[in-house]
Image (cartoon, rainbow, N blue to C red; front, side, top):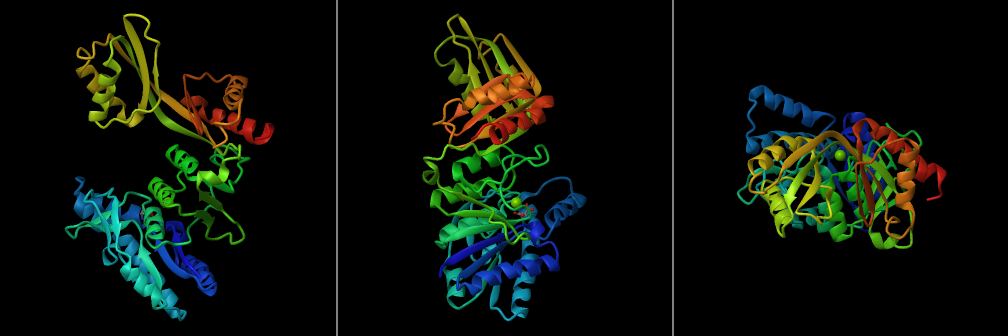
Length: 407
Ligand code: ASP
Ligand code: MG
């Protein structure tokens, strides 16, 4: 008998019929003599609707009031689910973030959890209740309601699992796990049975939007097994996200992803002096610009060239900052190209298996796809290609690793 945290996303709680399905999953754990804490999202598209209504009032964003408004959706779901369980003669209690409380910083719309007081929940569990918690919301030290950013209910769930020392956290959704590629691009995708936190972080930040990134970070930090599974396909085991140590001898490649909104900036003729590269990236970091792939020429001459990528929506601002500081940086020319895509393969096997990069490049070569930049880490290889080639690149690489060669 242990504590299990179950989280149900918006599509899983969208209608009363679906809430019935949700209650079956909860009752199943209760019958196994587990204590259950449930975290729910707002029903269906409720959060989108609330944001649309906000825009009807004013186009200006008032972050504090925004959070008061968008946190409402989850409160509706917890009440309904608690009522449903009570009507089936189970003891259940609904709790908003502030009632627990889940303490956060005051960064409205994207707040971070500082501390969870778990006494209230533990007391309700001890007295035989199913505890139903509103996802995505907390309270700051001044009593203001805060929210965690879109998709943030996952983070509530895993943070609660960590705080309550739960056995595991089940994230129920409308897909039955994490896949080796986006099924809209590749029709032969494979479901991943187990994946490490590190790989999952790479997959989610590369655009596979199954889990809120921050929940994976918390899972990793506190070693909470996270299961991603389907609310509706009861037989499916889903995907387990767990620690890397369980995979040390495993040489697999887990997924192929792409990010289509990448641009590249090239600084030509940067003075080849110690500290110039630092000066450039310090400038960007002071302006909160996230730089991804960086390539620097050897610098055996008086000047050197540096190319790096930024997200498309940071491009205009980055160029502006660079132009303003062109002289200070003693750069000759600032060039840029848009419409690039970063295609990556992810797997703990990459570091220890020779030939992974060669196979990836071969897949691109066979399909006549030009690579503009390459970057590698222990668990990832990314290449920059033209955005028009990105779907084909994902398909070709997926085929190479998951269908042709035996990875
Ligand atoms: N309801 C919020 C959203 O739609 C939080 C969540 O569902 O995780 O983003
Ligand atoms: Mg989600």
